[in-house]
Length: 188
Figure (tube, rainbow, N blue to C red):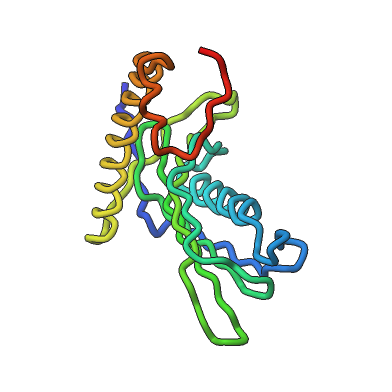
């Protein structure tokens, strides 16, 4: 029986950029581009990048650190730059950097950075192994290491939150509400 050689792909193999003009229909009531529009575009570019690396259909399983750093205006061109930062067995972390360009003022701004965890699926809809990642620069190694650290911290946070759910008590922890912007209107 011959051993199947594991596939590896470079980061550059699947790097993907999605560029779209921000139109008035994308604006919220404040006149800025709605965050949901940007999230939808980030999900699309994450899917394209992950699917290209995996060679399979991929689904989003989590989105980490979506911080809206700068508002995006109608008429700006937005580019979503995605790369595979980390691979596990069936999952990948896709790093996305969002850049907005204002042609009128010849200005560019970094508006978002986010990390999407994607899982590859086979034809039966089950998770399937993804190719390994070939790291060719210090930057790619740094991103891979940061993804490992983010994963560790996410697990610690999840454990802490689970512990808090079981250990917090309305009766004994009520003092924690002091100084918070809430008002109690219940009978204990």
